Amino acid sequence: MVLKLATWNIGGGMLGRSHQRAGSPSLDYYASVLNTNLPDVVCLQEAHDYDGLREGQTERLAALASYPYFASFPVSESHLAADANLALGVLSRFPIRDFTYRQFPNPKLEGVGPNDESWQLHDKGYAVGFTEVGDRTLALVTGHCFPLHRFGASPVEPRFAPMWQMLAQDLLTVGGTGEAWAAMDLNHGRVADLLGEVLRSGSYFSAFDGTPTTPKGAQWDHILYGRALRLLSTMVAPTASDHSYCQISVLM
Image 1 (cartoon, helix red, strand yellow):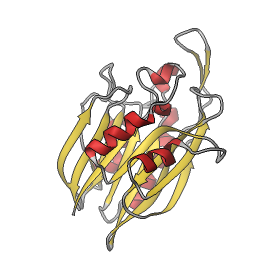
Image 2 (cartoon, one colour):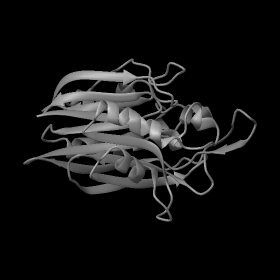
Image 3 (tube, one colour):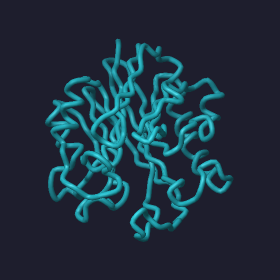
């Protein structure tokens, strides 16, 4: 079976430099990209969730792009809307089960934004679960990591090693059969710097190293795929958002 697997940081559903300003969500645009590329499973970062008070963005995109299964995992309050949380989202054409959210330990860094506003490091984390693809099970890890560069820190500093060890352990645990993949906004370019253990073990491979996924030319977004999956193609497509739409096709 050929599967299309995608990841996309949608920045609260806004367009342009959405991570730096509030605005009105444009979910029809995001749905149009999904309906054009037709991924089987999509991982979203920075989708807005409203604590069940109204329809969240993951649920809305599931309806607009005809995904029968979805899940949303609130991570932190949003810096883009006062009434929203930033969430990880999963859209799937196949049943999903047993998802668990894991929160990274927050180092509580503080900084100053581009408009001299005070910044505090919001919580980040990842979700681990499974997709039932016919009579087979595909494990999935999706996450969003701290933008440490915005606070004058680097994710390769020893003080952050426990965070990467935590993520690596979960990747290795669910990736034992090789039928697994991970979709993450790492806020760092070289996945091998942070998760070298899972690459060296042969459990996972990185799909598109060195490919910019933001308008400024940085690669923050990554897809890893398990050793039992055969990579057929990759696509990193610039969008009207401030992150590219990233997709791979694999043979399962």
